[in-house]
Image (cartoon, rainbow, N blue to C red; front, side, top):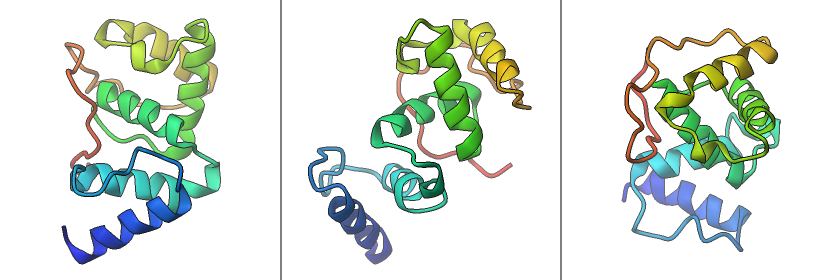
Length: 130
């Protein structure tokens, strides 16, 4: 692992000592960077939890790009409410209408043009820059 990545992983392990989400060598670089940014970086000001991060990553995966932290957190919470308090991790490609309604309810201007045509098999933690 690169030196900077090891440093970020150590920061995460120190900040969340009881978490099993950050085992040493098993994680890929995108996963560590995503969690580091969400918990200790630009997402920190929004009080995002480790649980929110996986749900947000799943929404990002369905959307096809990484949402801004503030928008992603609002979308996650509204989807939770609209989906009768079922985790967004249960949503799939067929739930585009629900997510659009959630975005509209929160007055979020989101791009749905890259929405998944099939439910992805895994969460994506890294997206190419727009």
